[in-house]
Image (cartoon, rainbow, N blue to C red; front, side, top):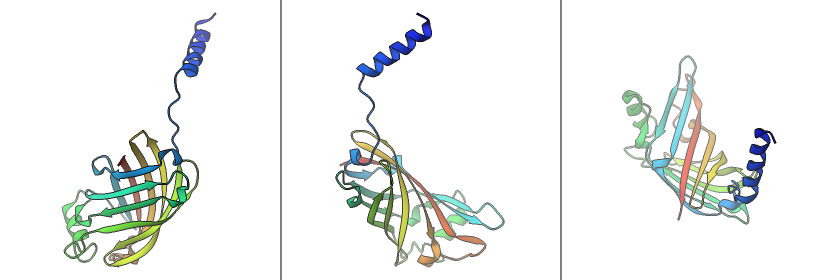
Length: 192
């Protein structure tokens, strides 16, 4: 028997005798989780007409994720972000974003998101709709969530969405800077 056939037989035997890796799916990840900021990232980007725009992250945030295994639509997401923790790598830009022209961190301590509905798109993805509150204004926002990995006690999601900053009174600089903020998040959470 040629060597390559032995390898295929060995792999087949291994596949039949070894338990398969757990499938990644939302229903299988059912439970209550706390977001781990040290293993997570909330990033954003704002385009500019003639330039590279602004990109940054928020360093301080917390939240919980509850996945209902019976009805994914009854799942919940709560996230609080400290706008004072914004970082673009440019101190001048960070100071401006923290000023009363944008986040007004002297008076506003957090930006919150509370889900109001979850709609499964597939076994591993969903649309999450909820209320975002910033600078005392609340708007409805929609994010797409993709379950990247799961283990017995940890899950990791990739989340994307677009938010209009004018909705929250932060539209200074438009139209030179886009009114649209692109969010790209990677949230890892630990089962409680």
